[in-house]
Image (cartoon, rainbow, N blue to C red):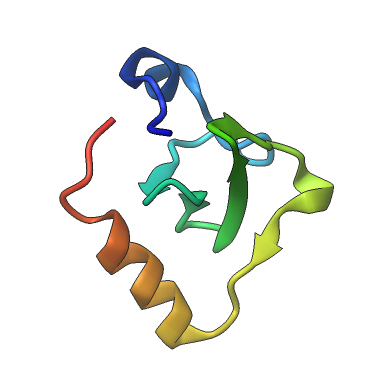
Length: 72
């Protein structure tokens, strides 16, 4: 289930208030902090305590690659 473009325009990272990248239907990704927020059944789970830290450089690049070209 794709997220609504209007919703994506207003969603920000709860930690740094910056924009998020859409990674498939699975994650919203903050490349600055390297934190991924999951999307459950089309609903973003923007809880800092439940975010996944992406410390591996290769995984970070995969997230960026998957998000490139995707728009809200």
